[in-house]
Length: 433
Image 1 (tube, rainbow, N blue to C red):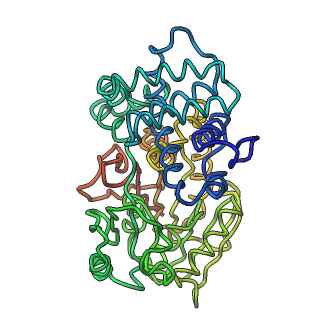
Image 2 (spheres, helix red, strand yellow; image 1 turned 45 degrees about the vertical axis):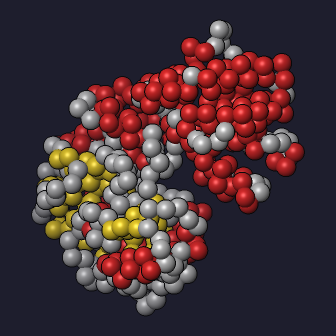
Image 3 (cartoon, helix red, strand yellow; image 1 turned 30 degrees about the horizontal axis):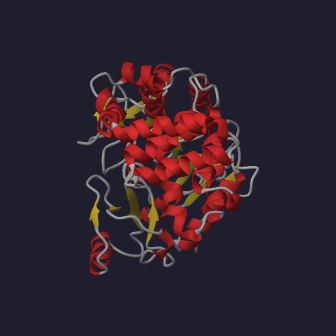
């Protein structure tokens, strides 16, 4: 993301370049892999931690840095250097002298030598008053103001805890491919290798890895023993009724986590994986291949717009992972804090409505549609379902009987939990004759 080659600047300047790209509207997923490739192998973990950690705490860092400035910097690059420096001092084990000197050097390398003294002075003050600033960082809600207002309105009782949880890193969770190996057996294999892990509490096939690691190096990856998937996301297929020999549509399917899970759990008559992103759909093939799930099965992977796509035959079940604000997965995708805008929400709600109405027409009488989002906003979830049921007399909610999440007027909402899953919403709907 820098005009200067990555090897010609220090690691902090490289991180700042990536942070600036996000501020300019680029998603991390569009460039992170490439940028990591330019970083020396031994520095990649640090690069990744500084980039995602600073994004995770972005608005909290912004709120505590404002009082430190005698006058506004009005300089996006230098402000970004400042946030990165403060993050290192308050949230990492990097020695203060190294964090300060490397960040000041980055400020100079980015062409702002005249302001490097300001950065140096502020970071030195933070390093002298670490405890006070750590307390301020912990107290800050850390959300853009528009999102904070919505969260406060939707979840007044849970708001403080929810804001804190969204600032944490999410656990690394995998879903066992039950066609290849059992969860208990795989856990035993991990423990024999001294890999700390434990079974998920609400997912039948989930395991939380208590230590980081390179996933492709993990036991059984090439053999297709598991997929990486959030615990709360794993519930989508777990909630469904028996779908043996039925025709199922996985709408908005890429990159294929639910597609694979459906094939692991059921012997379907036919499975259609639909998405409008052809590039991301390529990963569906890769995943099914690795998991050994595509042999002798009727699977169609289709590029198309869910608002217009027409099935060749009536569908017995539709899993609709609807486009949404993705506010429930901010822990895993901290760039969402900066990328999402308040104006996106009504557009997304209208899109969800169009997809719902169009796909509903293609569902068999007696068939089931599972509406899923990774959002914590009621406008995209409970309120969307209220609108749907008020305009569809042929729709009946199937109440989800569970002890997880929060029951809504329609459906159930899961909020992000420390060491557990992300924010997901589920509502199950049956089509009446």
